[in-house]
Amino acid sequence: MDVNQPKQEHLLALKVMRLTKPTLFTNIPVTCEERDLPGNLFNQLMKDDPSTVSGAETLMLGEMLTLPQNFGNIFLGETFSSYISVHNDSNQIVKDILVKADLQTSSQRLNLSASSAAVAELKPDCCIDDVIHHEVKEIGTHILVCAVSYTTQTGEKMYFRKFFKFQVLKPLDVKTKFYNAESDLSSVTDEVFLEAQIQNITTSPMFMEKVSLEPSIMYNVAELNTVDTAGERASTFGARTYLQPMDTRQYLYCLKPKQEFAEKAGVIKGVTVIGKLDIVWKTNLGERGRLQTSQLQRMAPGYGDVRLSLETIPDTVNLEEPFDITCKITNCSERTMDLVLEMCNTNSIHWCGVSGRQLGKLHPGSSLHLALTLLSSVQGLQSVSGLRLTDTFLKRTYEYDDIAQVCVVSSEVKKES
Image 1 (tube, rainbow, N blue to C red):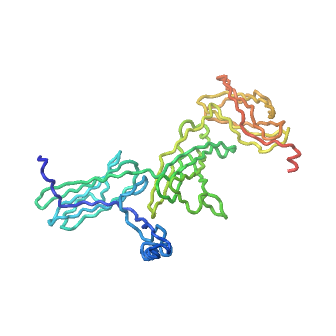
Image 2: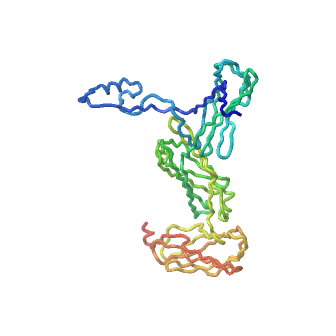
Image 3: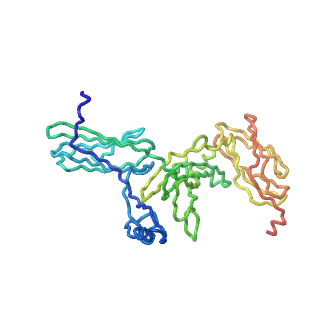
């Protein structure tokens, strides 16, 4: 091939334009005091300017809208829309026109063409128009590849393509934290609190339309982002949930195991799937974006071989008067245990009953309930401690201190209250 051969001119012209919402027109106000040389000239020119706001001409934002002058930024979760036009610039009829649009990402190539059928013919000064849409789901470099093939009147097959490169940016920074809470009631077991920190890392404010948590099959979720106001539920962030650039907002959710998983929750080990966050926002003039996180996972808290939890305990008790508590013992290991219960007194807490009691065999995943009696010899907030469980098979002892706290008051104070 002769490298000096001139490039062949095509009969068709391809134009590609990104479709975005317009923006408010901005002007630069120029004004001066009346005693200055221009006098009232600048003020009068601004009043006569049709793009300014009547009565507030010195504001930079006007009443008109302006079309985008450049490609602009594209953020993850937004919908990329583009207008593709193929125009016949020649004076002859072109046949078998096929327009194909592909989007190349770092991991895949997607066909965005609305139709895969070829157009039979295109007369001079006519065009083929197409609009493509794609919800952006990857960050990084994207390349829009537009290819056009056609046949001339002489039967020669022609082909050309153009590349349009753009970057997809990250709009939000999402961080999550898990907090484990063990309930004292047997009807509610092992609540998990999820805190989601969402930061707007774009250069424009966002209207947060929805931030919800879609739980996994094991959990029910309760949103803790509303408060009761005059008998109605209102958002803790106010009526206008705008998130300014670089601002961060915390969302809180409470997950509770479903009934069929509640008994297993105490012995689950390793990583458990919690669910995924669904975030919907709007920017500028209502441009919508949506992100879904991957499945959020947390490491289940380790309870060792034997887990001891309190089912019932009074909040306030009388000084030197017995009170009852109920404990739940769960075998979290994969072997059968033969347990012995020992009760050790502390400086303030004294156990009532016989120490060294045989509890019998406890199979893996099984639980048993114990009703115990104790009293306190010291007033104030006292910690319940001193329980010991010994597995006679392995001669291994498990110690449980600071199980719970109880408020101890004198009997006279309680009667007066």
